[in-house]
Image (tube, rainbow, N blue to C red):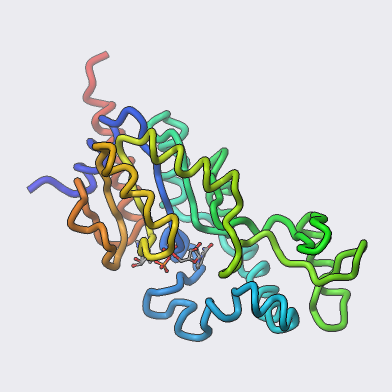
Length: 257
Ligand code: NAD
């Protein structure tokens, strides 16, 4: 029986316009828990509560007491072999677009040049009242200097939020539009580390299937698309993606000059 990682390597190599979609599971091997796996964030807090627009607006101190340590947590970890493999597929011209639901910035640190960050980023802060933006370092300096841990807008004094999209907020127009355009063009979509339960991103694989494209999924847990996969891989993303790169290298070595 052929190895699923070899099937995936062949599927990617044969694609005209391959797109990768990642979720929290691509970063768990870096030490950032996902939401829904055993030991995930959901077991200790309800992200829908601490990560909601309502909590931010009503009790910004509670929001920031959960949110502030996440900046340090992300700074203290490094990209893992799955992030590296994704960046390598882009460098080789095999993957044309990367869509990520993650806010941790690890794809960029691994070398991906233009990840479409549909759920925002920790890189900056914003004032929802006057639309002012500040860079991340300034945002954190304000949070740490304030008595209650809440960074405030220097123009209007309103509590600032990070650039991460909260539950109850609209997704930013530009990235989500780019994500759907990439899915529209894709003849292959590889999903890594997403349960595909969070809309509207969870509908992107359906966009690919609707236009006759094929999807591959690499997660430890189940997804609603498992029956529709051309290739379905289970297990750790880092090891599996490193194997995919190995298969591509071996195929390249065997190609006559
Ligand atoms: P999810 O937690 O719903 O699903 C994660 C999926 O990845 C599960 O199917 C799980 O089995 C799988 N998984 C976990 N570790 C894996 C590994 N090492 N190898 C392969 N598969 C693995 O995550 P989601 O679908 O991304 O949705 C959660 C939402 O929360 C998203 O918006 C996401 O951006 C956000 N979130 C982001 C981060 C981050 O930026 N790192 C962390 C937690 C949550």
